[in-house]
Length: 257
Image (cartoon, rainbow, N blue to C red; front, side, top):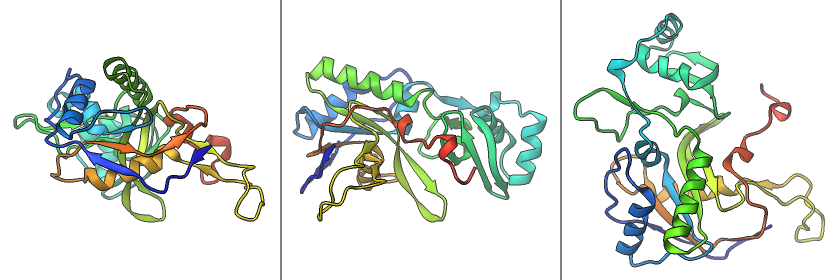
């Protein structure tokens, strides 16, 4: 279960540097924690913007080296997008869910239903080259590696959430969601717990890592804020640990597929 806190503290790490391929994110996080006048404690959660994880892992692609397939060219003409970007989207996807002018929704190979396979060109600088940034190859593995590295270097058992901006069907606007998680339960099953009047909850499962990601997004911002790492303090849980992949609805439960 999760103990619902009466108070949470969220701190965006100040003056976080631009991240490049090969950078040690755990080291940069601990430097940022020190600048903020903090020390990581057991139970803290470190939330990272997906972009810095992708950059550190070398997921930047130079569009000059992308040759669109005939399928990508045809789809690009339909959605009015760069054929090279569409080619990358198709390479990262299992299937196209919806396509219309200026909109391309796919099922990412990770199982996420998302626009443009999460490929982005904002907040990416490559010295004048046209580039695109892909999602991490395995965000849960990335989160697990950071969780282990932080525990090794600072001694604290902290949760790690990799956060990405996500559009939602039937809702306008994006919100942060967890595409990677480690050291905490991404999904918390509260079925069977009593409500205020003793009636057992029947269907309540909490997207715990998603809620953490969304709260951190309020500090991160989508534009030029430059705050890609947030520390969340005050959460408590004793539910089984689980990756962000647990949040993806199985195909057998998908009423809209």
